[in-house]
Image (cartoon, rainbow, N blue to C red; front, side, top):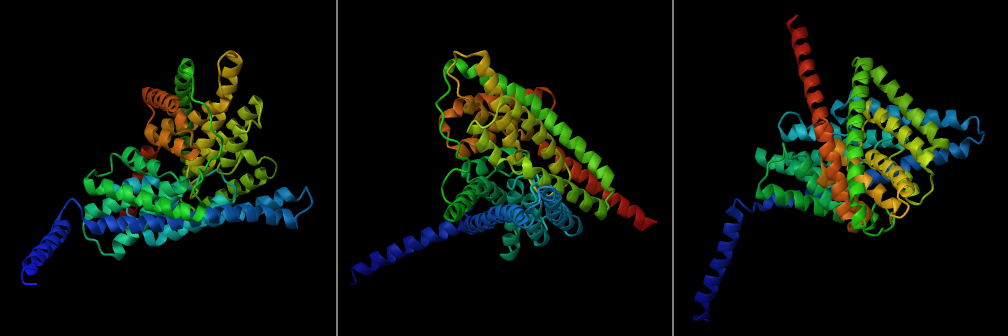
Amino acid sequence: MSEQSPISQSAMKYRFGILRRLKESNKTPLGILLLAALIGAFVGLVGSLFELGTTWVSNYRSSTVSQYVTDKWLIIPAMFAVSAILAMIGYYLVKKISPESGGSGIPEIEGALQDLRPVRWWRVIPVKFFGGLGALGSGMVLGREGPTVQLGANISQMFYDIFRVKNNESRHTLLAAGAAAGLSTAFNAPLAGILFVIEEMRPQFKYSLISIKAVFIGSITSTIVYQLISGQAAILNVGHFSSAPLNTLWLYLILGMLFGVIGICFNNFLLYLQTKFLAFYKDKVSRFVLMGGLIGGCCGAIGVYMPEIVGGGFSVIHQMMAGSFTVTILLLFFALRFLTSTISFSSGAPGGIFSPLLALGTLFGGIYGYCIQEIFPDYPIEIGTFAIAGMGALFAATVRAPLTGLVLVLEMTSNYQLILPMIITCLGATMVAQLLGGRPLYSVLLERTLQRSSQQKSNDQAKATN
């Protein structure tokens, strides 16, 4: 025993020395990493509930109206009324309680990472969740990914305050981890969530070993929780396509260049509509809420007979991939969804734009595929490959995050064999959009938000002086 005691004491000192060095090491602050894991798990839970909630509200709205209104002449006004009420709830919550919850919320998080925008989680989380249920459940052409990203970052701020973390750099790290967890949950795409923070939020994201680790951990734990609740299947089950032949790759470059032009048009039209809406609202609650009710009601009524041009867009993606539409119908749906998505988003609704962008990209990619099939009948072409490439290309052209768009679509569809044509398409879209002078959508939206905030402060100071 006396001979073993020095050995055991030496082993104990060695073990305690490792723990002490691990605790004191600046490269591995376990507290922040554990907090990132906890935040990711909570974001996965909230994001999953948000998805289930929006689906339930939308289905309940449709089934209830169909059950109680059997007259075909009354079903449209009845659906308009119910959808309008749901939308107005969302708009009212945004305007009266949490104005920063309007839109996707991603520019707000980018501003928070630069310490330019506050993160008031105590009002954003409930308003974004329940307001989003109303707006998305009404049938408006919005996505749930932007709200989930904003919810994720606000949940990070909530945990930061609860655990009384004092380091501002750690706050930035946790905000980024929560945002990545939000996107990972929304699309069941952990790698896309990580890349979104690194690529799209690169001007605001503070790179360090701990921040990268935290973003990885947040995305992983959120995806695990989401898959425990909703399953491991890909979000878009569109089947598997063959690899694109080498002699057809130039066609994807042309497709990408076309999407660069479309992306510029989409951003400019959306920003134009936003300017018009803000001029009409004049900061009046009644105008904001009534306009939301009008847009939500119209989307709900249109969805009775033309559900393909309203809603998030996943349904129309599946139908297009199944070959359910002709080229003429695809052109009509593309034009109408272009209009409904820009109107819904620019009006200030608490919803995102990712899913509508994916649907638009799929529709135009399908149109292009059909045309190429007619022009080059000898080419071994699968139309679905152009549609899948189009999903990521329009995202790359508008948001200016080609790598995120590429990986996001690959994870959502599980068509990893199409990585080469997708890279070419996304690269072409980004290059043309940049050459035409287009700017990333979220950067412009953040600048507009900061300008309005500065103007409001100036007006308040002027009133106080008078």
